[in-house]
Length: 101
Image (cartoon, rainbow, N blue to C red):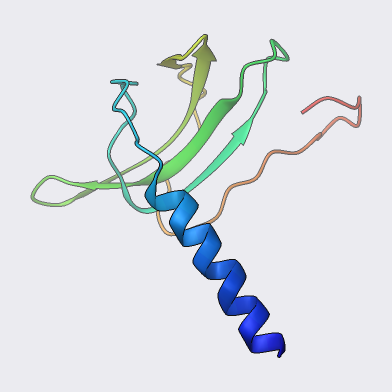
């Protein structure tokens, strides 16, 4: 019985997702592989910004780590100066414990 319920939920979810149409908004984000991404509002403006690490293959892997500031749907690399990375994981955190990210 449990398996039937799980399959029914998965079927409904699949039907809903198949009806969604994604539109390219030309956000200017770097194409990546071997990557990790996390949404967070680093500047507390109410828009979700993106922390992204990974690699792009251009004859060889070029690695990078970037924060993209979201200004009403327009994303700009803030040039945070992180060390480049690929294949890891990223997460936002409150390093100074002041209750913001």
